[in-house]
Length: 228
Image: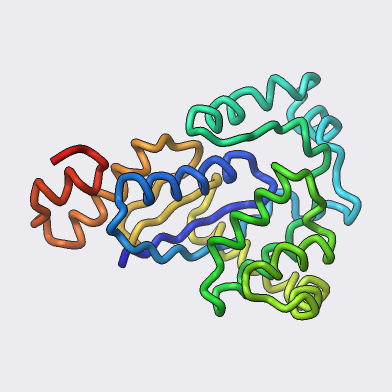
């Protein structure tokens, strides 16, 4: 089993790309490898209001971007290159994510953490839903082993929000400077908008190191999705 620690922010488009690329690489190139993915929160806008921040205004104020499409072009192109549907013009607001991260953290107990994290990210980017809304979170969590009342209680629990804020501080202390940030078996770390090949290479190197460099060529060929 390969442990992968994944540090993400739900409203980060590169995290959308990274999560889906990781799943694609594992499914297509390492079909026999069992991955245990642990999610950790990063808060890019910890003080975002409950109503959200209007993204065109945010881009203009923080980065001087007057045409949002120019900022959207690269992550959208990278998503399309990997076969994913991403139109950043669908979602107009960046919402606070403490409640969503709290439910993702709780999902570890149910064994649905990664699936739920991807589902919440998709709800935000693909369905343009407000992932700070407790009913939206309950809708998504209910498909991943949570009761709706349980999910709502976690999302509304201020102490859970504070816990996420502390976890985000811990992520920074651990050296996370950009997202998505991947750590494979506490051996290899990569971050940012990495390609499928780069993710696959890191997984291969990690497995190779874990086995003391004794991987055989046939296994590598199969794992990397190439014919034997």
